[in-house]
Length: 176
Image (cartoon, rainbow, N blue to C red; front, top):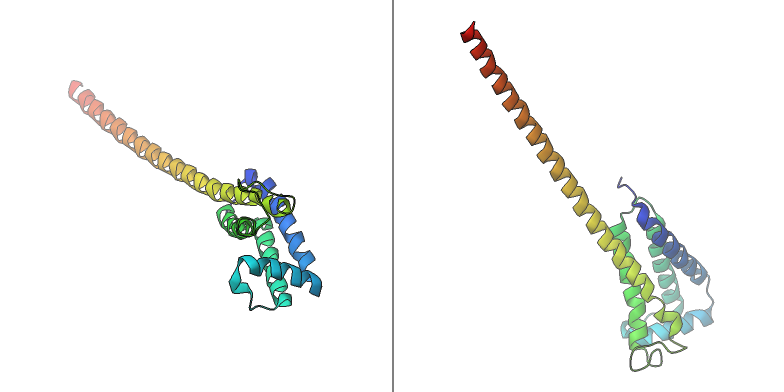
């Protein structure tokens, strides 16, 4: 089981709880909620138009629950959790970028776009989890390499000391 990086706990817990709660709330959403979210999403992602709204809402809910649970589960590596979060948040930012009225010409959020634009923090956290995992693995590899080098150096010093002791022993025998 991978060890938990304590620096990842606060962003994983906060983001995971937020997304899990959102998914659980959507799970029991009504027809009106399903129709509204489906209309919003299918306007940005046309492949969703053929899906009926209640099915879409259940799928969205299940996705949020899965991402939230992935972030909260300590046995899932940070890098994997970060990839899940990054994918989820990228799809949310796609809604923001592609939906008219969400932002101005400089991509600053309008009042309507603020609830979606705030999801950029999730992309930042996801990227941080992915990169933090890479940095940690690199540090672990460097430490293992340094340990192997130290062991080889110690073995070499032992061999040299033994060689020197044998040489001195032979010299003492000759002198006696």
